[in-house]
Length: 267
Image (tube, rainbow, N blue to C red; front, side):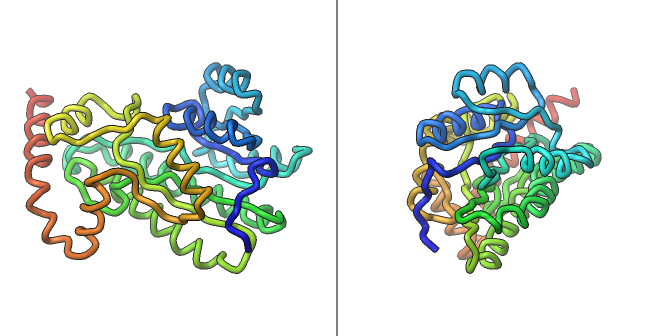
């Protein structure tokens, strides 16, 4: 199977399309000539983006029990065959685990991990019929680097990374390519004030969504199935995989910041 992606022949479903990275990624893929269906819950934003890019959109709550069936109904009605799925929709976390609401944790795991798995499972038989297809899961540096204040988010992205890697190996003799990308912080509304304060006080950088979108497209074009974006984040991921205990001490500073900010919220 050739790794080269013929963008002119791609019709991709993009979840979370109305968010900061979603809009940037939709723009970058449109510029390459891909046909897109933009998926999200905010109809006004989706309609405006679809009109600007001359693409289609579908208003859908991907966490709804019937979402997979609705998506398959939509796919079967298309004149241009759907050839791929980009799982981009996600929820963020910004609290110490002990202070987190369990219902919010379950909702985060549903959105970030279980729903991408469910949608992928539903679409897989269809995608296997296509001469070339792709799956892209948008992960995070925190999918390979445990970080205080991000316990639930890390759990979801660690899971998504493992799912992507195992599925890629399971489908390696098919026409479906499975990609996983791991951006560091992105300068969008996705990050709460708390997360922004932690990033500022630890000297962590945030990339523009347009920059991240271009990196993702380059990753796909280059056939790199898994990639971490940003330095020194890539180094910390490598070091964490080599010997996680070496990284533990460097996490004391963000932990102290989260503890202080959490204490201030309680006052």
